[in-house]
Length: 535
Ligand code: CA
Ligand code: CA
Image (cartoon, rainbow, N blue to C red; front, side, top):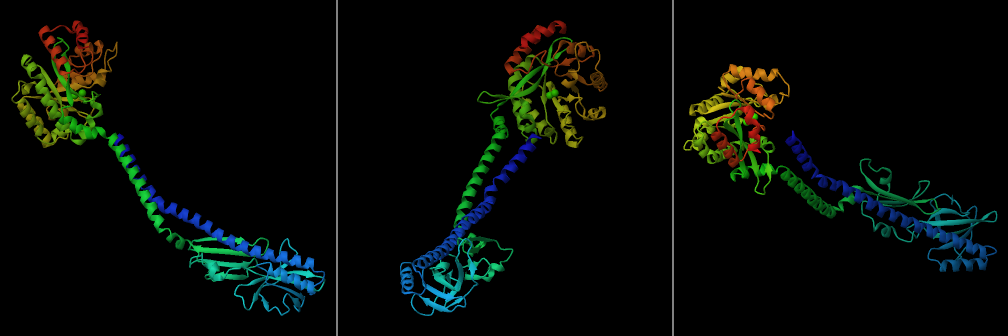
């Protein structure tokens, strides 16, 4: 479960690591859109404010000339008009007409040859009107700003719409840009690019667009550029962004990997720990409940790190089994057991040493050869060895399994069913496997509370073991009541904290020799004494 979760987290982390790369396009698009929109807006505002300034210049000049000239077309009016033209960059001409466009006078005494492009338009907030007009000699349209004078006459001033040429206007724009100046009634005055494309822009093409009005004048400036064209100009930045994103992704991946490495550290370390013999055997005494004698021990293990840290087997046993490291680990433990207990086994020839095997040991005959190789030339005889098989994971009844059991039996060793009662085995299964010893799991021993007179499950297990003619070892015996209950049911051997925890080799040997030489005290007297010896 735990490793599944960490795999999912690692996978999620790996996917997340690519988010920056995926996000580059999105971020850069958003950046280009924002930046180009700002540029486009600046452009249309510059153009529209020029139109507004030019027109307002015309309005001001018109009002000034009219105010300073008591009547139109007098020498004073003409002089004032000429002065206004000379002192302004924008004012081109003055004209006095009647409502039928009959010209009375202008600043230079000639006919003003223009043609209107638009209707006469009111300007909100101003008394003047504006008309877009065209002079034959000028490419850019002009504005005619007029004031009514008396009942029948109009006085007008002409200003250019824009001072720049069309070429100058289109210069800051790319070739794909479309710019136009229109009246608010829709009449197009100036168009750069394909003016028609404003009205039939393909719906599936994205545009960066902007628009602005020339102050109070009914004139609008619009700009539109296809986004893809603008985006292409950022190819360099794209590369920079992608590189940055790759760096970010790589950094994230490295973090992720180092996290994974850290959380799986035991995985990386265990193999080395086995090679360095950091997995140490600890010996838990097995006691005869009738005599108090030490009859043997179970080899348990601890991971003693070089830094002094000690790790209990629960933290690495499952990992060892899954990875197959349980095989070399057991090999290392057996070698250390031979070195630790060789002398003791000579002194106590009936002492049994119980060694835990794993499901992987039953897939081929390697374990039988290893046992032979390690204990064959040692003071420890094969018949002093018991090999425990856990019932938690049922062994398959294959040829390999039975031949391993047969091989160990042939050496004279015995086999124990570990954690009995916790798995799914039944009588027939145990019988076919050829089990010699049944180790009753601690959960059944725990059921014996003070005052308990019977525990049906436990009693059933004991009866079953006796039917199979198996020796019984009770595990996890922690109280005197438990020891006495088991003894009353005919359970001969037990291990647990009431007697001793798993001990280092030196402490175990000391205890074994003390018990061995002390003879066989009765359990009632022996139990408290053993606790103090072990502590
Ligand atoms: Ca065991
Ligand atoms: Ca056990």
